[in-house]
Each structure stands twice: as structure tokens, then as C-alpha cells.
Amino acid sequence: MAFRSPMVLLGLFLLCRMLSNVQSAPIKITRETFRECRRGQWAGIPADCCPPKTIDGPIIDFSPPKLNPSKPLRVRKALQCLSGKELRTYTKKLQKGYRLMRALPDTDPRSYARQYGIHCAYATGSFIQDGSNNLTIDVHVGWYFHPWHRAYVYFHEKILQKLLNDTEFSLHYWNYDNTNSLDKNEALHDGGCYKSGLYFPPMYNDPTKATFQWNRSERAFDPKRPADLAFDGTRYNISLGPPSFPDNLTLAQIIWRNNELMHRTFLTWGNSTIAFMGKEYREGDPQALGIANGAGMQEKYSHTSMHCYVGGKMFEPKSAPEDPVFFPFHANLERLWDVWLSLGDDHRNPTSSDWLDGEFLLWDENAVMNRFRVRDFLSAEALGYTYQKANVDSWVNFDTSSPYPES
Ligand code: C2O
Image (tube, rainbow, N blue to C red; front, top):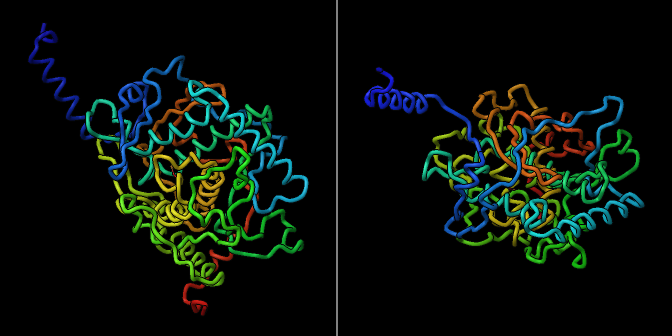
């Protein structure tokens, strides 16, 4: 029989190989990817963070939560705008959540160690594309950056909810981009947050609490030191160590620089899908190394700048979520992804199925492995939450030709 002939089989095999090389395909993380996980590295710094080789139990397909249309969405609020009783209750809960998460044994995929460990594996080329032996995977420096991190924060928040036994618990966000210092009540008529978000959120800075991380730069410990977003992300070079930030700038100068940087990256330099979302990256492509080689505008500039600004654990992709402030910071990044989408007709998500069908695995609040796709994480509302409105006008409407303030 012709089918049995080795030559025909070889021919068919080669044809399939050729076709699969021609047709592009999204990155897919599978059980096999986990099994093949190996020691990774970033800029020569080794990373040993593979999850256990075998995933016990089933892998389920993620399905968005069933929402009750008459129930209002959960609101992730701006940390700087919490006050009084709400602030006290939130701070307590948040700190308790991390205490419980840190207390879980490392064998539990919901434990804090496994939570930050999995980010490390996804960030250091520890995962290899199935069927290849050298093509490593990274969810940074390219177009999977925004949706993957939305999913990562989503499952992390679910785990905190479960530990706290409170399905209404939300991971509020650090609106570091908000340079507006207005805090008069009349500005809050629409429920929005107008207070400056420039300063490190204090609930992450209490050394006696589980939300603390001692390994940060001194900038993060100085309550009067505003976040400086205008560090040039292309200068990020981990092997040279943390960059220095100018400390002789006045508040007015930092505000000017932040507004200008946000304005340019969202409204001029970031005016196309690829420019903002990052380089297309699919099966068969090598992992992009170095943020100058494919990161979108938000990832490359303000995002990298904030990782460097907080410093310490946050400085390296391998360890960044070991600092719990990673999560309200990344919650803001995904809020800003939505802001970008609202800022112009040419601000659109990629439409390629290589992006939409990118497939990843993360554990949920029941320690069950979920297989999710990029298309499942395009809308916060569909996932059951929304963001409190915060001021963005100060940078959206910023006039980049306005004079730089004198010192
Ligand atoms: Cu996975 Cu801000 O990084």
C-alpha cells in the first residue's frame, strides 16, 4: 500500500513541515512546554525558576466569569484616592491577603513564591517553544505584553480574593501617571480620582507588613520623591546595574517631563498598533532580547522607567513581582492600555489570530491550571471589573512645546 511506503511517509512529513513553516502560528504554552522548562537567563543573569515539571491534575480552558447584568462591576480604584475608613479597611485586607499568600507552602501554586516564580519563567526564556530546542519564549518585549500581564494580575487578584474569602476584593492601582495635584472635592463630581499619583503608595511601605519588600532603591522609601517616568527606557541595561535618576529636579520639572513622556508615547510615537503594543512575535520567532528590540511604547518607556525607579527586586524581570507593588503598578499599566485604545481611531489592538490565539497557562484561585488565550483578556468589563476614572488630561492635553520649568 502506497501510504505505508517510507518514501511517501517521509514526503508527507516534509510537506507538513514546509506548510507549518509557511503558515504563521501563535505562541502556545502547553503541558509539554512546562515539562521542557529549563534554566533561563536575562542579560546573562541566570534564572532558576521553572515550575514543577509535571502539572498535576487537569488543565481547564479559561472561561470568563458569568456576570449578573444587574450587579455593578467591581471597581479597581486609585490607591491615592482611598481615604478614611475605606483606606484603613483596604490596607488591612491587602496586607492580610499577602500574609496568607506568603504562608502557603511552596508546593501550592497559589503561594507567593510560585506566583512570582511563574512570572520569572515567562520572563527569562525558561520556556522553549514546543518542538524546538532553542527558541525561547518571553511575554515581554512584544505584543503579548499587555494581555499576558492583564491575565497574570487577574489570577493573582482571584487568589487574593479566595484567601480573603471576599469575591469583591479588588487590587487597586497606582496611578503614577497622574501628575495633577488637584484634590478639591468639586473635582470629584464624577467619582473620578484627581489626586496626584506621583508618590509611592504607603500601604506597600510598612516594614512590618507582608506587602513590604526591603530590596528597593532608596527612592521608593522617600515619601517626597515623585516617580520619574522620563528615564530613557532604551538605556535600560541590566548588566550595568540600576541607572541613576537625576535628583536635582524640581517637582515642576519632573511633572513636565512625565507629562511630555506620557503624551509622546501615547499620542505621537505610539500612534500605531505595533508602535504601542510592541513587535509581532509568533511561533518560530526568536525571543526578543533587550527592550529596544521590540517593546511597545508603554512597555519600553514609562513601564521600564518605573521598574528602575522602584529598583531592587523590581529592577530585574526575573524577580520583579517579588515586590508586591508590582501588582498595583501593573494594574495601572493595563488601565492605561484601555486609555490608549480610547485616544484615537488608529489606536487599535492587533487583529491577527497569531496575537488573539496566543495561548498561555496560569493557575487559578483553586490551584487549577487554566489555559487562556489573548482574546479572553481584551476587556476588563467582560472579566467583571472596571477602573475608577482618574485624571489623564494633564498628559493627554499636554503641550510639548510649553517651556521647560526653570529650577
Ligand atoms: Cu512582567 Cu513589568 O513586567
